[in-house]
Amino acid sequence: DGVLVPFRRDRIMRAVEAAFRAHHQIPVTQPLTQELHTMVSELVDEVVAEVRADAVGAASVTVEGIQDKVEVVLMQSGHYEVAR
Image 1 (cartoon, rainbow, N blue to C red):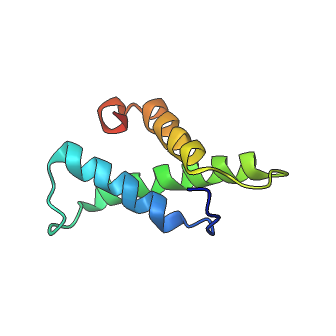
Image 2 (cartoon, helix red, strand yellow):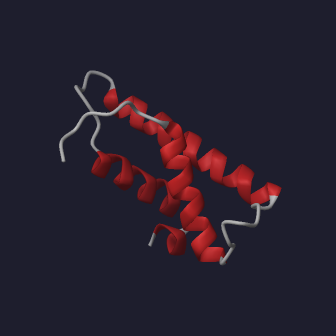
Image 3 (cartoon, rainbow, N blue to C red):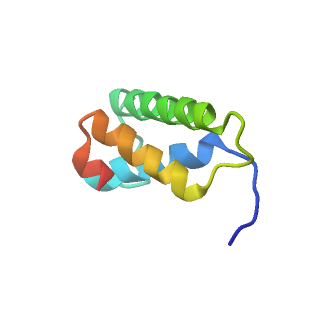
């Protein structure tokens, strides 16, 4: 809706974690394995780094731009089904 909000890594983390939970059929009440949690965190770190690099000199970053970046990072890491 065009409202500006602060950039928050935790929102990206929740979205990527939810995608992995859905793909692996892990209920929200069950913790992720350490391996899966580490992988999700590393992927999110990569997304955040790329978004920050793209934002240099830009006035703002769009939600759609961040979503696109998440999809690209997931696919480049071989997680095609999760990206879908």
